[in-house]
Length: 419
Image: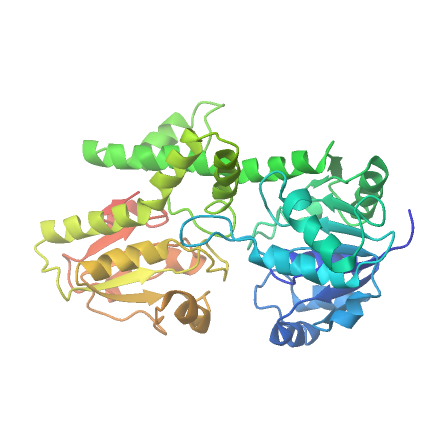
């Protein structure tokens, strides 16, 4: 294996940990179009909290930049940009196409480009590489080579980190696949799995999150069903979980950059080739409606306790898409907030992990600096550690105030309902 110079394009939740690990072994350029983000990283500050300052400093061979010229020194490019969906739930490849344009401006003969962004099978070779070829004037497998190695970053997870998760690799030729695999093996302690083709690697990644989405949808549907029966869903799951092969999924809001998005990439491709996926889309519909279900359940509990709904004050604890993590991308807590607003409630939202400016820009919600008092209802929407020990009594208007626990982290004796 030759001594490569690595260029990582996109320094977010996925790209930065990659750039740091490669920067311990290879000369590495971390590129991002956000100059403010680059300046902070060069000062040892990572707002995503995925990489600590000491780890940034340990990557002695890493240079973070927003200057395209720096990428021209590289010969092994890794694209790690977001792959969101638009308001119609269709794949938005804009970041990926722009990153491919960037690669096209700097790639040279014999170079390699590897995509990590989650896509539908075929996207790398059918959507991205033509852009690289057009801009560069080069041809894949003749002048340069391509690969796909799907990211498996779990934001906020300090146990299952980049180097401890087995990495899928693939390449556009057998030789490039082996070269790509060897490069990743230099930084991935858990080892690699070399897929037979780029499409297999793409499909493997997109079904990982689709599988989780469907499993969570099943227990979410059970939560709705058992609520009508007056049965506690968590107690049912705990009882069923005494069997060795019962899958331990729990109900909840399904958002974030992966599980709440990736299934739409797979269903988009399925419908493009004339197949209507029923199970995957059914799971998405169930999960996308859970925020509305929670809000309506809370309203019913409030009515049952004699509260006037219009202008009642409600505290929502949590805005990020998951616990102990600042990531607000595709947070479905907003569905609870919007539904409560429709009922005329006055909603306060508190989250010690979320950036108030990002939340305002993304969702139009003003986070409160700290929980207030005199709330008719309190909803624990995210399982931050801080919320496990929070004093609910200080927030409640009176003993009739409703407490609803979306994540089942509070004492059952102190709540009125939970998923």
